[in-house]
Length: 558
Image 1 (cartoon, helix red, strand yellow):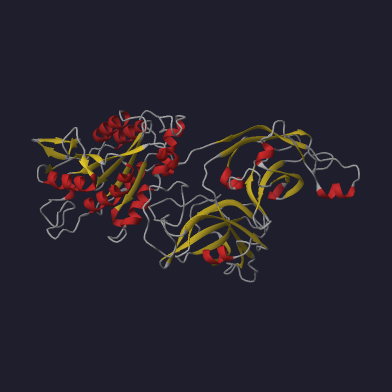
Image 2: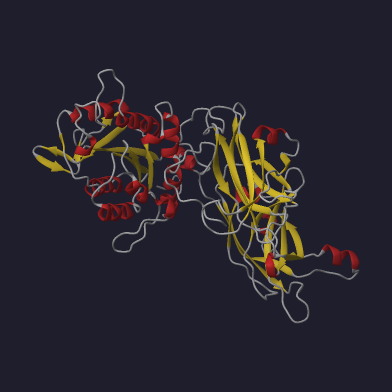
């Protein structure tokens, strides 16, 4: 599929559920697109897209369509995500799904644009447009079939009829369970390539929707010239596969992939997950046209699960219910680049009028959410880059060592008091502080996960050492939230955020998981505190789960 654009800065998308487990996220302020889950009337809706009668925009081949979903945020359209690209297909049924939080009380507008994929660059420029269509989520949910059929408008080529878009929605269950299965044909499939050639089969899986239509949810790889293929192992989300309903009918279709991306049906069979899990389960592949014409027709091959396992993957809330605890720590930048705290233009200026600076705002906004999951509400507060006792320290305690600041108010008061007792200095070194926090996290009780909130004003001077510390920290129960304060260049912080791939240490070791999330305070107004908290904490549940799952630690077995 066309790659996503490189991220220049975090773009808030409160209407998207990137993780099923967003219990850490604060209720966000209402917007045109929607909100993070709150106490309002809301549920998760999965959107899937298909199209019909797309125009042929390539001179010598059919269109290679992919779709892009946008959400209305204020007066602009923000990209939600993209489907895969399907080669040479005028009636694509995309597998990609988009989980959206539906709110009864908020008007949520979306737009889908369909493109002919002409290159693999991240930008959408250069692709021909087959057309676009807009819809309201409320209209979709009020439809008896929970689907809307819309004419595509705005084809980039004159004289072409743009075709039709179909948007389907379905409320989804909350589960992370997976079906891990490998299918193989134990008797020859029907050959569609004549006497000389052999078919190139691939397998698709569709689930029966509530409106009686079939919705494709998975497509396997193609096995060239193989009438008894063993496809690669599949890891299928139970939510995407059957909405966690073991008895929901599934349709398995075998196709022969021909040149140009076209495919020919080789037969199908229907089965539920429960039937797949039965011992010695095997299924006859049926071609309906042959069955109707031939009296003695039996089947066109037999397929069985070579291996199959239903794997339970606990939710973030399952760990919380089992008594797992979030331990918050704070690290504050006291380097001279913040400016003289006595001057109003300093990032550390404490206003006599009581207006909080960005350090205070970030501490309160994020701390008020994280501390809801901290049992003792005591926070270790550290600093770096200040002259303490006549010497520059790159890791010192802002609150007396051995104790923790009580709650958010205690953290803010400790920060203000520290400004009176240290001299801002430099350089900005993060590795010593990360090393200390990593050790504290490793020494915590087994059911305690540490979240470090690191507030800094820009570039730092020990990038290799910092990366080494973060790679090592991926193996302890720790996440690092970096909030950029002020208007400096935060490119270095963006490099630490593992969205583009896991970090690699100076010795070549790759981090076992992503533990860093970065945002910049300048991207949020003073009235968007809840959106800041939501964006900062969105990835935390997934990082938490990645740590415990990688070690086989289930709730109740810390």
